[in-house]
Image 1 (cartoon, helix red, strand yellow):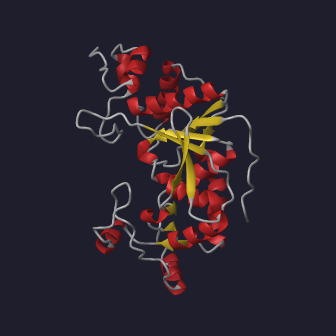
Image 2: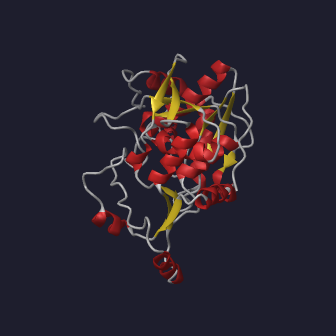
Image 3: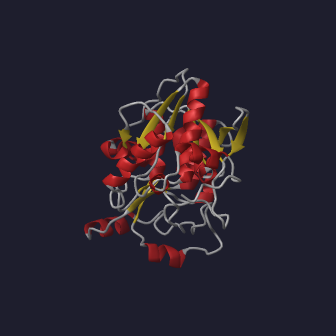
Amino acid sequence: MRLTRLQETAQPVLRFAPSPNGALHLGHALSALTGFEMARRLGGRFLVRIEDIDRARVRPEYITGIFEDLAWLGITFEQPVLFQSHHLPAYKQAAACLDAMGLLYPCFASRKEIIAAADPAKLDPEGALVYPGIWRGRPQADVERELAKGEPFAMRLDMERAVALARKKFGGPITFSEIDGAGRSRIVVCDPQRWGDVVVLRKETPSSYLISVVVDDARQGITHVTRGMDLFAATDAQRVLQIILDLPAPLYHHHRLIVDDAGLKLSKSTGAQSLASLRVAGVTAAQVLRRISTTAVPLPSG
């Protein structure tokens, strides 16, 4: 079963798609405002999507906080908001399409087993070990034995086969169109194999970021994807799935990142100061806008 390609739309459609597993920080503010302002400049629509498939980390207060932060920043968006947790069958359908093409395989390997078997010199663009293909091509008897034991498993994409199919359908090297802030475009050649056999359906959740984002961008008719440079390389793997599943390719704009005093990007995991805490401290939305417009303007201490 193949996904139906959505009709192209003349009106630009942009989105901000946060995960409610922590409070938004200045980096999220820059991303949301970049998309919102580009939509206004192009006379387009602006959507918000809540990427809440990781149920173990999602908290209701984080969802509420996202909407409060966006309202504080003066960002408006269309209703209703799409929650990924409400659309899990669509992601499973897309994965089933890939599986029917012989592009997926179950992986029962634990994190410890993957680390032990991986080549420490082979890292993906995020600095993680590239999956060493432990379960790629394993006999069906091995798979059935693990299934009978009730062992959890992830579904991984056979990247080599997927890239070969995508190149055949695309008619050459896989590319995407990148635009800068002035609207100038360039063609970027992808290198999906640097990611290795990525996870399409995770063990602990019923989907993954990779499959969900391409399905939802197509479902919502997204024409322009604005996001930070930290996700630039992720476009490689997403383009493979878009081509294979006959999904439309948005234009991409990867904006600069806001970094801390050590030069590291702001992150929820490292405790970056939240927008909510800035608001409580008396910082105004106007001051935040000035701060993210340039790295040279510090926020007041409150």
